[in-house]
Image 1 (cartoon, helix red, strand yellow):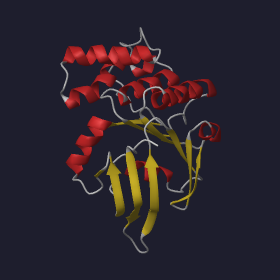
Image 2 (cartoon, helix red, strand yellow; image 1 turned 180 degrees about the vertical axis):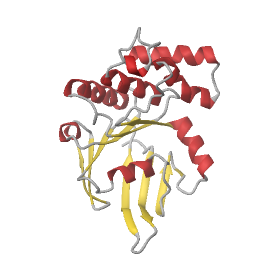
Image 3 (cartoon, one colour; image 1 turned 120 degrees about the vertical axis):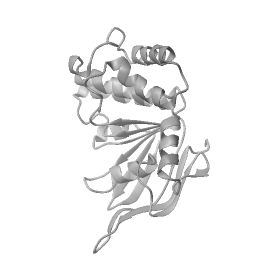
Image 4 (cartoon, helix red, strand yellow; image 1 turned 120 degrees about the horizontal axis):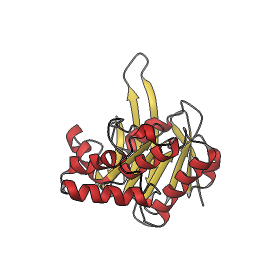
Length: 229
């Protein structure tokens, strides 16, 4: 077994109130490179709340969160944002592309924020990523000129812009028809199996969950069971 990219040790997230609201309770989990992991369960069970903890968007209120062996759950907001930009990529159900920007420009945004490449080099890498996702010739099109499946592939290219080791998806196929959904899932699987990245997605689609290497089943904020292929 490879060393995990991400590990949680009894993490939880509780919102203050009377009574307090437990979104995630006592979750211990490893996310490994080369594996496509899905997180499933009924609505309101804590899937997305767990994903936002894994993605360093929210901060756990208990337990430990380790990224590449380093405890990161207690980092400052700025430090977590910098780590997300460098090492994580996100794909959501709604692509969140900027409508006034072209596909190329949308993919360039994370690279320009990281400030490691020149504008020209960012554009070249954006075009390369779009071509790998079957979007060659559509680099200059704005989102309204692309189909739903094409927009989601642009979102995947944007998630890959800074060469992240961990890709997280929150219902990344939830807005797509079956054909486009299959295309997106195959690409996510290849990111894990062929490129050695860690990929973890929340999904309500049990057909997608059946294709994963690791299926995490949640209920009431906890992990009920983990299936490994």
